[in-house]
Amino acid sequence: MAYSRQAKDFVAISDLHPNTTHPFSELISGFSGIGFDRFTFGFTIKDSPDYFINVSLWGNDGYINGLSNSFRIGDCVIIENPLVATKDPEKEDRFCPSTPSFYRLLVSEAHSQLSIGSDIEMMNRLLPLLHLPVKDSRDFYSLGDIVANGQSLDRTVINILAAVRSIAEPKFFTTADGRKGQRLEVKLFDDSVTSFPLVCWDREAIQLVQTLIPRETVLFISDARIGFDSFRNCMTATVNSKTIITVNPDTKEASLLFSYAKEVSESGVLHEDDRPGDVPVDSISDVYTVSQLKLKAQENPEVFCGITYSFISKLDLDTSVSKVIRSRCSKCRYQVNEEIQSCSNTACPGGDQPLTVTTGFDLLVDVTDHTGTLQSCSLNGTVAEKTLGCNEFVSLTEDERTAMKWKILLERCKLYIKITPSPKSRSGMRGNVLQCSLADPGEVKQNMSALQ
Image (tube, rainbow, N blue to C red; front, side, top):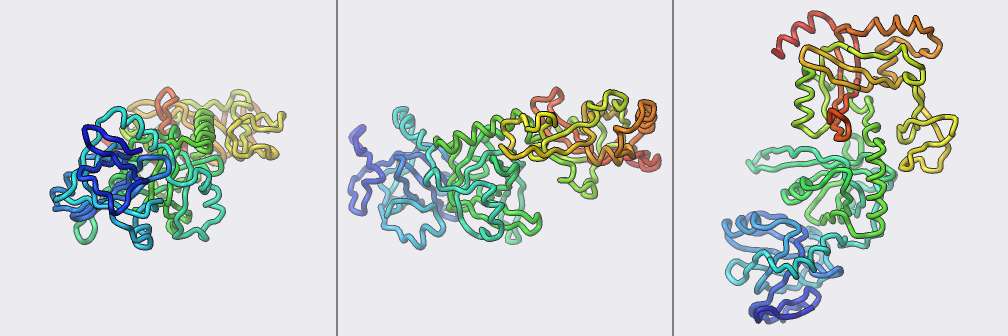
């Protein structure tokens, strides 16, 4: 592993010891993590599948801030003249990533130098290391395991293998003592759980996560902190100073999960999982025109909800019953044919379990106001039953169905609607009606005037 280039010796992490005496010793390693405070910051480097080590830099404010902004997770770095110090495992492993090395590197402004590596040969050798987890690739919890264990895992540190479902926008804040911070939440999923929150507070972790492609990225998250969120009544994972995130790990387990994520994304299961009951309508207060809903969906890739005072301009109740009432798998929400007695979705988490179905209204309606039309919005289940005032549609005659249609068609309604980004749909979005009722004229006038 040790060799020379331009008369400078490169020392492997595995060969380090306190008596290392190369006057221009260099380490070229894959950059794995970073965090910084006043006059110091730390990161973790790796130069082989099995060896990695923590580095601490010391210097004045300008030096530290300059270096902390000069490279990112995934960069190759060259470190000259570091001090090799024996680490205190109890102290260091408590706040930094746990490493197999007995040592840590101290880099000072006065005696050491750090620079970005640009040697193509070295980069080609080191960059694949970024896809190798720093922990045993089989040593992880599935999201289902975390949920099943519940609060018994509260405040523990574990490894997680999961796919990225969605990435929210960062939220910025200022603490009581004037320090600025940010928070970003990622939704994870796997073959056992469709949505699980991962919270990032660290600047570098947030910058890394923002580069990921939802539903096409698998993460091995080593040493994530697990906690119980009493406000949301669910378990969560948090990135902390010990955490190292490996993107798209080169492991068998990650490859299987990647294939599942791709299949389940293409099947539409994740879209179907956005159910009306997830969002209490009492919490929705923002009012939009149809054109404003479309514009916000284009500008904001996240799910959002709003109220619109619009007309239902398309409502096909007088078509065949099979196009109004449908059966879906209760496990994955995929449309099924009950005669087959099995779910045709190969990515269904129900697997080989007996088929259980839910049957109800499954309508697509157009929502229109003076600014435009939102096509093919879902009006399903109990929401459709309450809107139409009917739960025995199959027994109605054709004339009764037509009469029901015209009670609401082209009438001004107050619709609570959930908008979900959907790159594969023609409009790039999907609308889901959460509640619909005939609108009060006075309320319509007041709100529409406010939107002018």
